[in-house]
Length: 406
Image 1 (cartoon, rainbow, N blue to C red):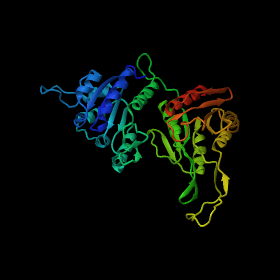
Image 2 (cartoon, rainbow, N blue to C red):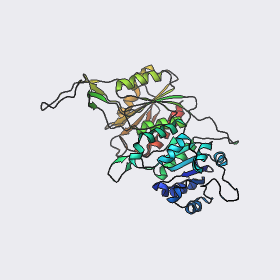
Image 3 (cartoon, helix red, strand yellow):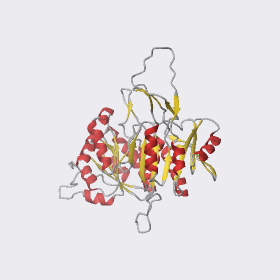
Image 4 (cartoon, one colour):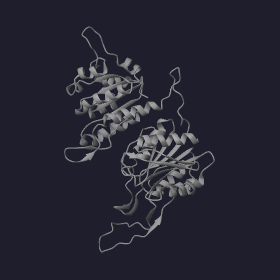
């Protein structure tokens, strides 16, 4: 869906600037037209000649291109582009963009941009974790920018964490998927998106059920699938409420996010949100049991064994299924270890769901913490198997099935 799209690629002074070549190649391969705008510091890491050779366009860096008064119009670039991508984006540029410090051509172009802006931060972990950087990222999200963050980076110290720039092929895929939902008619006007006017409530991530002040019962859910679904619904025009368990993930500013910890908190938030929703997508890995009592102080290791009595938590999907109105839809998830389809079919009836998204722990590399998933969608009409693919693409498949039953 990048065919014919005009992309302004901003490059800042990061060691990751060399990856811009791969981004350009990926965008052009998909049919996009690319115009590079680079900061003076960016030219210390990659030459404009290289970039110009790839884009077949002069690289824009300074306000004035000649000494005869010829100048580069950031306003014209803002009107020309279908999207702006800043990759890599340094902590310095993040700060300037968040605070409107227009001291170079790239920042003035950003401030003049009429099209969506995608930002791929690139810096070391300490810089990324600094409160000022995190605040600038939040500010830019509040302004409606799309932040593209890598899941994890690998530092020389051996620590893992965000900070490195996301891989070029992933960045290109994100832009491609964004434009896939931007359908236009013959006059170039954007058509209504297929979830426009719908209210979608999602649950994502794990729940933590406290044992004492420092311990809990939980699971390994990363929230990746639920967050991917929230972004897909939001991109396709829905008004999205995301109820998230304790995960370290960000989402688009336009998504209403409610952070919870326990099943009880998620249950109350979900029941409240569902009453005003058209769709509930229940992707969270909710703990099925919780301790009968929570110790007020840390339990000491004073004997060889410890018995903790558990009691059931709320069955959120079943509770919402009991509340479900004729015009509402429920999508539930089932992670199984054996008898997968039979167990999913039981859940379909018990939860009063419109369809179940089934996956299995026997499909290696597709469950907790992984970037891919392999699902089977089970409904009263039968089942549909899907190939293993990135969770962002799985989210698209699931939402396509949802649209078919709305």
